[in-house]
Length: 272
Ligand SMILES: C[S@@+](CC[C@H](N)C(=O)[O-])C[C@H]1O[C@@H](n2cnc3c(N)ncnc32)[C@H](O)[C@@H]1O
Image (tube, rainbow, N blue to C red):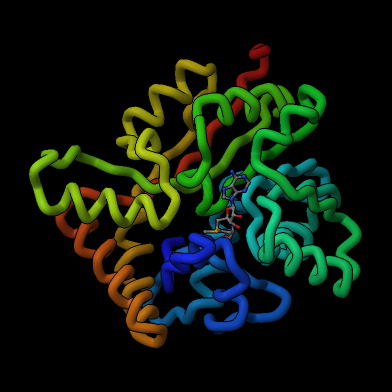
């Protein structure tokens, strides 16, 4: 998710702070900082959790799953995996900082013993053993990661044969001329929201990368219409800065420069 107020001093983007835990309506213990998947009549807690439920359903999570989630934020999703899908072994990796602290306290207080929380950049997963997980999930966060192709390779190494990788990502359907005002706006938005330039990919580019690495593409869906209008509507109840941010990305979506993509891919049985 984007920013609410740009903290110029620390430059911590809003979705990396505990701001959403207190400013957004949340249903304890399901604390989220994602954009949400919005259907008619949804409030923020329902939309944010729905994004996780759709992801868990597509992954086929169950009590036998061994799940790695990278970018678990405030920790709401690990409660979805544990409580709504009965997953018994969950490793959550998230950047060090106030969100991880909030989530770790929550997990301890709620005695969610099925979750191990590791703080750090995604690159810490390189210490994990090959073929350790049946499922790997990234919910509304991968667009922040440096060097996504290397991340995808690590995901493939860590998945068991037939293991599934399910994630949501921003997509940038068409390039914008360097001299367009949109170009400058997008540069500003992506820099404050910590989206590296090399992550401004089309869906086809992402699919090619995944394919080249050896994933089998099972499913991909455009979610823009379920994400940006609902989030912009919700933002009306939030600060002016968040409203401007949400309306700007909605405008980019309507102009065809931005979308939101859902991916379900699999490591084939014979893949190394
Ligand atoms: C928009 S929030 C989404 C959080 C959560 N998945 C949710 O659905 O509410 C993005 C999260 O990704 C995490 N993140 C960003 N870059 C990361 C990285 N390089 N490695 C691990 N986590 C990262 C941030 O700490 C933040 O909590």
